[in-house]
Every structure is written in C-alpha cells, then in structure tokens.
Length: 305
Image (cartoon, rainbow, N blue to C red; front, side):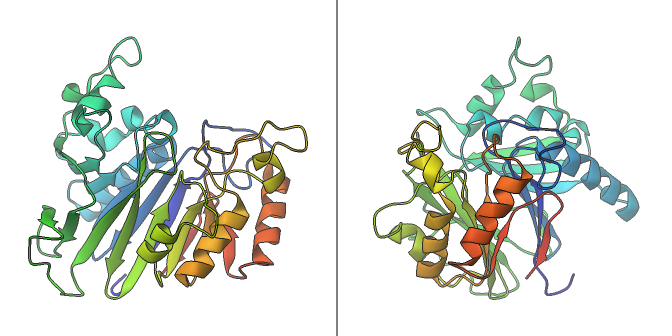
C-alpha cells in the first residue's frame, strides 16, 4: 500500500436501504466510503454500509494485533448518512480510537445531533454507552485535518491563520460547505502525495455547473459525485414527480462537474433506491458517452490511486 491511496465503496444508495435481487449488482446499502492513505483509515459517512466495514475493520485489527483506529467524517446528518452508526461494532469496543468530524446542525454540535439520533425509543444504547474512545468535533470550511504517519491523533489547523505543512507525506483533508442540499452538506477533499479524492454526495447542479465545486475538485484523481436521478425523473417525466430543488444531481450534472474540474475519473454515487441494476447500468452508459472515464459506484468497488 506504500504510495497508494485506496478507496472502497461499502454503501452506494441514497435515501433508504434496498436489499433484493434487483439491486444485488450495485448493492442496496446507504452511503459509506472508506479511504486508506498512509496507514490511516478515513470513513466518509455512516449509512448502512458502515456495518460491514466495521466488522472488516475488527478483522483487520485482530490480524494486525492492535486496536481499530479510524476517522469518520459526516457529510451531513440526514438519516441515510447516519443510520448505520448505531451498528458500527468498533464503536462498542473499548480499545477502538475514533475521531469523528461533521457539521453543526441548527446550532447543535455534532455530538449532540448524533446522540439525539440514538435516544430511546429510536435505539436502546446511547452514544455515551459506546465504550470506544471517541474524539468529536464540529467541522468548518476553515479547518484542515492533518494526519501524520507517526501520530495517532488528527491535528486540526485553520486554513487562513495557521501554517499548513506542505509535506506530501501528510494526509490532508479540507471541506467545502455546499448549499445545494437542504440544510447544507460538506464536500470533502482527501489528498496525499499529490493525489486526491473528492467526495461530493447530496449536491445538486446549477446552470453552467457548480463552479465552486469544480474549483474545489480541480484536477482531482477521483470525483465521487451524487447522481441520484435520471434527467427524466429530475424533470418530472416518465411517471415521476419532479425533484428539482431536492438537493440531488443527475448523471449529466456530475459529468459537467468532472469536466469543469478536469477530474481524471468520475464515480456516480447515491443511487436512487427505486432504480434497479439495469437502470443504473443505462445511466452509467449514458454518462460514459459524455465523460468516458465514468463508473457507477457498486458495493465492493475498490479504486487505487
């Protein structure tokens, strides 16, 4: 793994889980993406895909002979991006060390919002009863997260006021707050050794493309972009209600961002739960005619950068 950033998709659906024979090809779990860089495990969102990831992290930790160490970043706190966290097994193991970052919601701290999502009658175990060592902090656009290979902790710097290391061996994460989704959403950029991945779930396109996002994702190696709705669905055709303003994109919007950002590869993400495997393949093929290096995300997809 030296010099390689590895991205693995554990959950790729939006809104709600959809297990079944029609979705087995791409998977039915809600959003969770793992990024491995320089010995660090970074988890993007905690949809139901995080359940299997948690079990795999425990297996790896046992083989390695040490505890689970991971950093979890929430894009936002809607249910499909948090619903797997109560079943994330490493959070119950006392030796696990978890750094957790995410947005404030209606002036509530991340920890308070996450704790409320687990209160009875929703769930029988509270956040405080999870035995892992958890460090939780609100994320802002001015924060830069730094991961040194020789440290277990995450250093938080201010982009405008602190000196940020230019050491390529230090993993860096920055966030951009997008308002193209109800209540807003964080888009994350993870970079290391000149390589980067941008995670842009739950965002909607604009006329002439989201220029802020294109600049944030400039020349990224991998752009993971929301592509929940077909154009017909988005416009309210083919028997669907229109979804304009719902905070989700079409594959064409995702391709437009990829081209404007000069991204090397695009992965379509946050698939509509009502779409079966055949429908997603059609959207993938249509996207490849616009931006050739496009893949529709599926559970188990691993990309090495």
